[in-house]
Image (cartoon, rainbow, N blue to C red; front, top):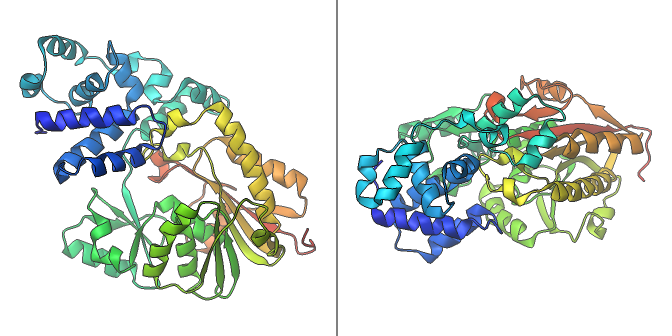
Length: 423
């Protein structure tokens, strides 16, 4: 790895800017690059990789450092995680730093407590210990310290997966079909796909395979009425539209104007015509209530801790807390209850999070079912097998990076009994 003193200085400033972690790290980094237009593509790649790797391994790196400063963390990262030779750094570091770095070279993570090795805050380890042995916690932690692959979804309205794979291969981009999603592609490396002709023409979108599977779990049919309740920037709405071959109607609801605005150019590229984007003030908005009992399928990608996405968003570990998770559980229950009231008798609802905490997942579902006897649980493995997807994680869909190479996703599928009347 060759880099210059100016890259080292820029990385230190970037890390210093990000480390208060008051806002999402990726957003702060984007602003940092905007404010420093002189940085070249290689500089930006080095800084982004260093910053996110340090966030993924922050507990370990801080354990090695006597006084925690952005400079010390970056030097420890270069020596311990990048395997840099002290000779390569000689012109950039002081004698004191040389001595300290040579001392830490031999230190292995396994001498540290579980929380440090797993790179989880103590409160999270405590939560996980209620339902997982320590060996599994460590496995989960280690899998979330790796960087995530780049997954694409082929827009089946405009292209076939085989054609897209062929095009990428001809251009020397290393890509393969995803093992579970029928429309997914996994890239090796991180090419700048958002400038690629396939992306600009709407034939591909960036979307984790786990997220794609939620669409197949919902399995909307042509001509149905569908609601994507927490649509965000709309990746799942667009997938649902493609699965419906643009026939029928999808309502993409979200409380965030900004996220929905990000959906508009994607919708424009997609070739779909059946998407209706609507901002709502909350789950009890009149736009929601007037659809009560009229909807065939409802998808809820609920606001959650996001802990299943730590490979991509390692800063979430410091931006969540036991208190924020309690607040999320209340919000999740309210959203599930409101969204469920939209469902027709015989309709299907999928509740999903990118979390592996039962209190955001199974507990929310079990409490809802106890209070709403007109709903039954469906078996996710059976629903996926109907879509010719052979993935059996039991009654609930539960995905883990180590086992499935996806983000950590949870999903439950519910149906409303035919005899039920809309509430």
